[in-house]
Image (cartoon, rainbow, N blue to C red; front, side, top):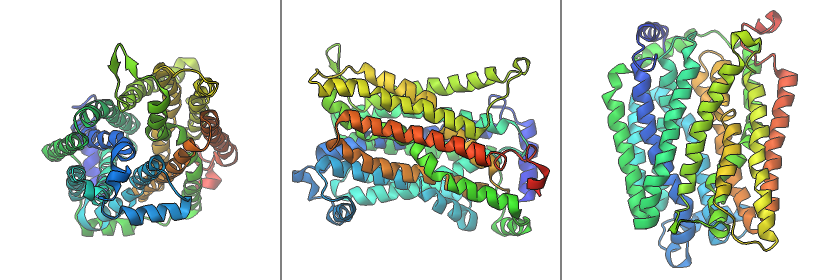
Length: 474
């Protein structure tokens, strides 16, 4: 925003505490994001199962427009793919590119349309993509609309959350936590609603429900527009951008370091992201999904994960507040240390799956669905200190005027991670389950080691400006 818009936003934020002590706009943006994430995760819960169990079967795949070219491109890199391997690869490409397109969406908003129009365009494209999934031949155009829609929507609505607050407002961190808790509610509901409709009624009913959810989110966004930060005219925004001073040595080094740690962040998420790719395929083969005579849909496992994640996110917030109580004499760790600790905890989740995997390989019966609770509990305790903490690091450490771009760059680790996870999932048909999950534990743990090295070597560079040495701050 321009300096004038910054001042307007700061004035509004100081007096607006209508939503849990925060500006009313946070409530509208969080509720809108809830419905957008409902649509996204509802579709995601179904996609790999829809492709692997139905659309990519030999009798159906020929009707998908353009799939031959896409398959040839994938197999030119990976070699021949089975039905399930192709489904995992396409799923990985989709969930990966979802986190690349926000860079495009940010540029479109900053240079052409503005944030509000870009968010509305993104919502419309996402709704269109969900409804196109009703037509088997239109799979690739549908995924294209969804990718562009998320790109226009995701980064810009998160930036509007930040725009509600003055630069020094300490409520900003808790605002993003509230924003992400709304996401967790959506992740709980989406697999139950869309997954049940898709698996128990018809695939297209599940995708249609996701489209309706996106339209509800659009109406919520438009309904709360008057509570959101005012947008500066494009000419004023360009003039304000030109007024920013050069980065300086410290700012340039910060940007380079934030870009350099993207590969470590990519490795930190492979255990978590595999829960949406290889884990449901592994579960439907080796897990007893019957509870009290009821066949639990595989998509419901994602609702279990979301529920546990919601609780562990609240628990993590409460723990760090308790840890850093003034009377305790303890200080809350910086973001890099938290991410490293989160990696070591999250690595325990795939490591835990060694127990049932070895039992299966020894000729044991199908494993209990309770292993899903064990996996998600350990993973989500760690993950609560990875993704939101990384977002806080990039939004704080990015030089002024580059926050939007750096948040887009932060999402690159999710792009790379999901691409990597799509390839890793193909190893499930090659490696025994014990080796497959041990590999994931080693990758996540290795990311933790890497983040500790970053802390030791470059921690002062990423420290808040008021803690940085005067020589570096110049």
